[in-house]
Length: 245
Image (cartoon, rainbow, N blue to C red; front, side):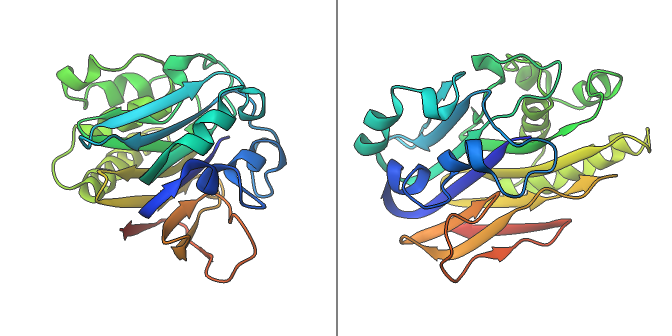
């Protein structure tokens, strides 16, 4: 199971967000405190932002974040008002390659998912594919439940928050056809103006998710608190949180 984090606010250097805090996302790759199904997130990492033309840009690597020689140069060179990042613990059967490494982007959106859908390839993937816009399905490059969830989200109408809510509703309906199947469905999506996070699960405890409304000049939604400063609050299970710059 992965760890995810997102920031929106005043321009922030990447290392301030990603690696400098005492319990940063980079540290959570090997020292996560609140994971349910894994202790090390060593199957790659990625970070996404918006360029000067407000087009999503993404960097991904299949190495653990601590082994990526590009991390230092990237972290001290990039300053942006929006960051979404992921450190990955791959679900069994889903390959460790660039196509399966988050964040995912499309239609001006950036997306990360923390969790899994149990036995995703056994029936539910085909049923989910039937609800995805064919043009969006053509953009799917990997085989993860995370990328399919993003494709389902992109196929919904409305704002990013509405898309997330509708995709969540459709996913729960699909899961309801096989009631014993487990799913962990923490997600964050942004259009660069606002970001919405969801903490949710089916037949299992929901993964942890926190929000801080005044962190380094912005707001953060993350799997785990970055530090012991006041202001971090847990997002309730089966609920959404929306933050903006």
